[in-house]
Image 1 (cartoon, rainbow, N blue to C red):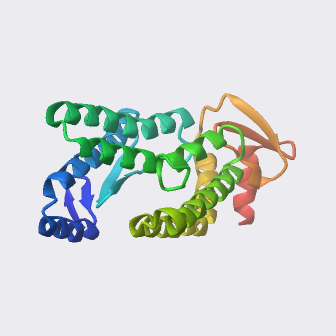
Image 2: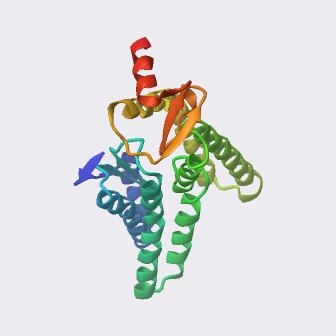
Length: 243
């Protein structure tokens, strides 16, 4: 990958760019690129303004990923704001481009990127937003597995649709790629949950809500917990001594 400031271009981006140049569709690709860049900048700038530490923005041919080095126990409302500002900035960018250039295909590209990105699939904005909302009602682990379940339903529904009705190879390949990303998330969930708990042990969070839970797997975001009559700090201290 090549880095410009904190923006990294995946190698597939350059391969796709060469194909676009050969096909003579550089103008169309330019508008897609602008929409993607401003979408990701919407996430990045909002996150930085809210105190998140920006790691990098990775740009792919038809999308991007903005990564932050922030705590897993970050405010849910802040996380929601970071996610929704991506689509909002993209909409504003589209309206400006459409006002200046008036090409019909700009609208099609904009809607394709926007709608696809808001699907309830983990790794996409829609899936991340779903997971955050679930965290307002369920524990960290339950929210994750509910999100995985809904993601699988969404992906397999689109796979069937792409094979039977739409017959679009690009959509099929994107669904396979997202399945792989979900597999990575599932593989890393134990590590992420331990990191989530360790943050609770090492740092003092000013949680205003309390919750009584039965075991260490029921921890939730934005709650201070009591387990077996013991507050979470003391419980986690005993837990890490055993581990």
